[in-house]
Image 1 (cartoon, rainbow, N blue to C red):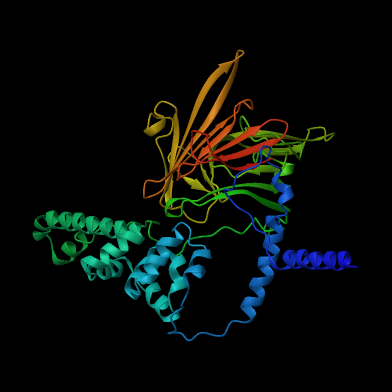
Image 2: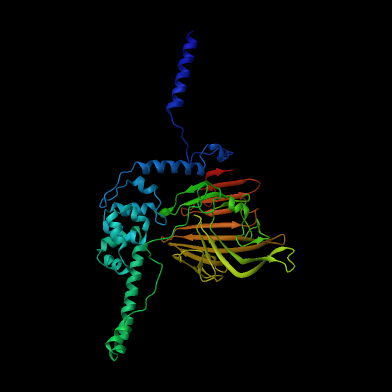
Length: 451
């Protein structure tokens, strides 16, 4: 009898412990000798998270109260950190918000519309009426300390201001040099000659075009099925995080070469040497540069009307950049003449097939966009009389932090990625995908292992 009572007490204690103590996971705890597959962790898939987040957003929107036009939004640090401020680091936005200086927030929002979230309705309306000259005047009115605060959080704002000052000085010098030439002209002619040439530039535009969210489970544009699975997310310096994710698109499963079609049927066929180890339709979100030949199809009946046939006519090359967030930039020339976009992106294509930067003779092209610089290069070697190419990518932000990718076409060699903190991600492509995260390039401390 005593034994039974004792067993009941022990069972009650064990049951209470399992109910009260939450499950705990240690990111850098000592790892088992043979790490298990990440799929056993029970972590929810990204697509399921999207659906949960969507429902929560709808409920939160329904419960919001209407704000007054002059009401200034208030946020906690946690709320600021979880919002999307791309390309600004969330920590920099929080530092700027902490200053409580409404002028600095407006100036930052003039360059980065994402910062509108921190402004009242009236402040946004006021800011949208600014022109380039108004922005320069507002910056001129700041104290030295305020400019330092702005440069510490959003250096691109100060850089735009300095560029405007330089342009104004050059314009004034050009106007002064023409003054003597216009002295002998009639007043009307002199007034016409003093008007500087106008040039439209997309840099510094208040609004920025955002693509349709084609990452939804069923995207609004193509009605294609999509799945996203995040394998690794590593926080980096100044918000320069590294996220490795697998993406599936039913549209990509039908065609990989967007300019190839034969007899009305899409072909599953890589654009160039394909280092992607995933099944058709799946891909990693690695940045890449591709050169493709653009062809237009021409179809019609034969002279005798017996058959309907299609042919192709070449229209030169297209130069395509695909970035980690899914952004695609397409140029019709090596000078960065962007096509298939509503306006020219705030970026440029440089040094095509020229010796440049860290890659030297192996440099292919450099892309600068939204404060980020991508350098693309290639290394080649022979093994068993077969040529293999290794794709190189170096991503750099305005602070000089870098993420480096090394992606060999030879599947016997692993893909290696070094994040902005110095951690090394190694992805081996055997029969299965084997992904390891090390503390540094020495590979002495394993932080994570996925299979």
